[in-house]
Image (cartoon, rainbow, N blue to C red; front, top):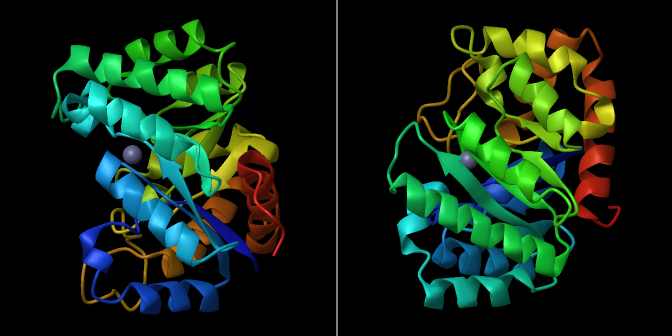
Length: 264
Ligand SMILES: [Zn+2]
């Protein structure tokens, strides 16, 4: 099966020692293309460097995560605008709101989010969206700006039917991670994914985070990597009553169309 990982934090320093081995294992597992998440100006720069070094295989997003919203100064914003125009950048984000951790004050989070919506509008590139415990404000901002941006994916979706339907109504897509493999907190998600249309559903590792809990034998470290993406495919297929090959085929086609990736 051929897979596309739409969210891998490969710029993360936990991959510094063995990044090329991680990419080799991903390829061996069938992951043919990956979108490297930019979550700060610095990691965006690094994601672009990685994508430039692996043309046709790695792509990048340009964004500032709500945790780092306070760092999006005028200078950083100008730099992010430039980075977002690079040809290997296929989306703006990750951006959004995170009221679960509140690492940046909420008003700064909303401001950083709105400014990245401006970048998406100016570049025409889709949004790679992050939301946790902030659905009301997040949805209100997206709805208000909906005419200005081309498309968006709610990455690492973990919410319920109400949020799913709200995003689908706005024409957004949904990204599913190994959260669905979690036999404790992922159970509700197994119901919710059944009614997501195949042409709006994509898969992502969110590596090094969210190691699927059903990997056997369990890896020695907690670090997740894109090579484990087939576990997400199998959990998603079981939840939807579909074959893993079928899920692989539609999620790959959806991701390729959404991000405008070349065929392999
Ligand atoms: Zn995220």
